[in-house]
Length: 134
Image 1 (cartoon, rainbow, N blue to C red):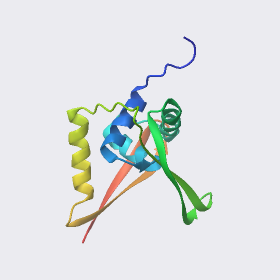
Image 2: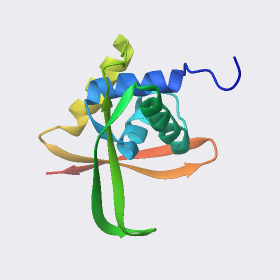
Image 3: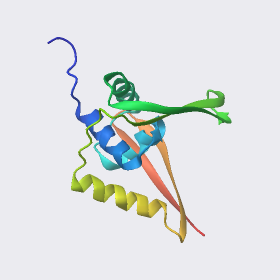
Image 4: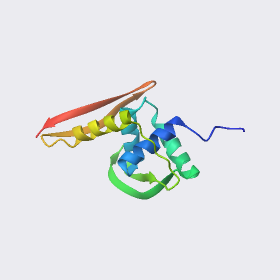
């Protein structure tokens, strides 16, 4: 068999993540992926999202346009992904526990939380959690 193998640990992790999230756009998948799993580049996440659609593991649930003041222009296209019927998620206990912990922090009643990826530099991605007391 020539070319890249169809199986990928990164894509398996994305499938497991979308199993827990139900639906998410690419940038959101990238931010949460880097919190739960070993750090990978944003380009690799988008590659595996597209590859997952072509292999039938993922589906595009909707495409929306968001207006704003972005560095590339005044609007952005968000592609939302969800699992297809062919997907075989198999999240382990460690992933589920970490996901629930992050979800609990973000939905805390006494504080507002935002996650922003502020720096992608060669080998690492720094993610800051800002806690603004209500």
